Image (cartoon, rainbow, N blue to C red; front, side):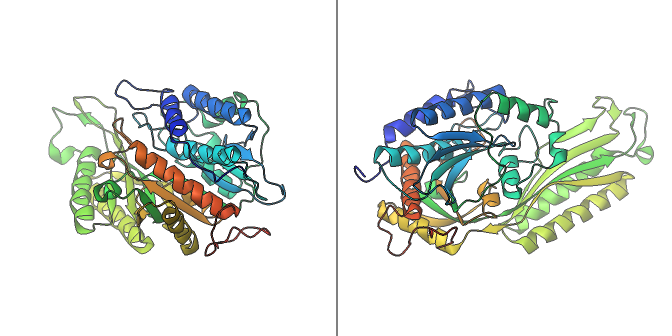
Length: 430
């Protein structure tokens, strides 16, 4: 080894700028939604960088992309690091991309220093984490963890009418690299991400050590009534789904979050049919995003939502249908992995604090496969999923540095007496 591996700040920051140019918006953000031409372009750019360093490149049938720096024992499961490159329609430059490019910087730092390890280190770029174009989100990591792509997903339609199976095939074909199996053994998983909240910046703490991810439930609600003339239909003759939806929304907004500071309740999309100014709608659809760190509380809130919706629909004479789009229970990361990240921050001379993730991430599903840990870094004003999203360079570099330290400890290439590397015989939570 030619020296202790180190993050090259200028290289990481330049890459963040270069990747943000693909899908750049006029307001300084990024629109690079999953399985679009922009997504394919940025994947090809990263694959080109990997090939130039001698790393192998592969993808699987879910279009997850893998960049691998080999170890001396090809039979050992690799250490996996990763995140995603897709964005929201008006997304920021750092959500997902920082985690991917920092993970790639870790591989380059290992290569620069000539680190030799038994176990390979591999970067994963997960498909459709955001879920903005195709639902559900985190499709790639879900498929990897389950080692299967649900057949019904292939028929899913995007917000622009595209078929998922067609877009997957086009994305895979656009990058002619070997096809990896969908799901394979890994020794551990690390993910760096921006906090997407205000806590770390408010405290000027550069590193968040994530202890777990709160549970998330996505619902699609459909309320059906009867279309009618807006000017001639009296109240007693109306079966108005918008009236039912509005009454339910008012009660839920007024009751859920004000009563429980840990709860998160959001209605993000509303559609009315036929959508005419002068007609009572026949049908109203809307989505609910419900989150809570406690599984029992999440289940209780879901029952409460159903009860409120049923009551409002009965009052308005409307029919109700509720479909679960995403149902993810809370996940706690192994204490040994949390402590390992804390020790990595101390070795780097960086302050840290424990934190629960309010957003779901690919790490939620990788935790089902192997010991998993997440590292957060602050973002300005806690703003994310927004073109104004910003991470100070010092925080981006700090997060990448702790990611490198944690990777070195897991690979056995650092002084980690209290946190030994992953056992050479296979995965371990130590």
